[in-house]
Length: 163
Length: 160
Image (cartoon, rainbow over all chains, first blue to last red; front, side, top):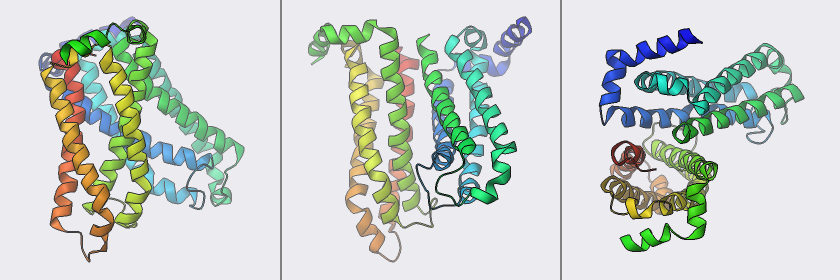
């Protein structure tokens, strides 16, 4: 873990980190973009999660919704990684010891693992069930886990300010 | 008005919120979630009016689906926002950035009401008028401004 702290220290001293930290406007502007990125990313994934759980768009095939909303979610994800890294660079050592930030990062990894497992297992047979109003149990569980993690990630993100 | 909000800070339920860390943070998280629904839905309607998003559905369909979410989220955002405001009302009330945020939100809500009252009518025309598109564009800019101002309260004024 010490290595990560050294990286944090270095990141904070880069021109990027210093500029963002010392500017009154840069951080809030980046944070605003990050907030709109959440709408794209979590909005996109949540629609799919709710469909997998059988709670919305029950008459739409799963693959059709995936084709329509996953590009938005991925666009949002790229915005989040970029803006998140920029904000992190300005206060990396502070984030290193912030519990809410640590929980947020762990949940992002967990959401990624969940998506990967879902994609390599249940989604492989999507052709068989994509038109069913309610997906198989494994897909429903994956959807539930995903939406819980993403909402948790957003909540933990806000909580960073209160630790 | 300032002294009224100052007094409000010292009522027992407001002091409970202010002094219970997790309670204040939870209200802040709720406020955060309501703004995603509020801004997310209204901006989608705006983008549809501009002809950018959801073109497979009519403006009427998009508006009728999303506006109920917009107004529900607005109610929750106002409630959670007011609760946070009360914990430090004496400082928020005179704050320049806070006043900018409230003014921008007021303008954004006026544009939302204009859109809510007219979107069905606009949809009946052969093409969405330039005026309607202008209102939609202004609405997007105002909501971005509202969020930016909200974030700036912490950055510039150190409140919240």
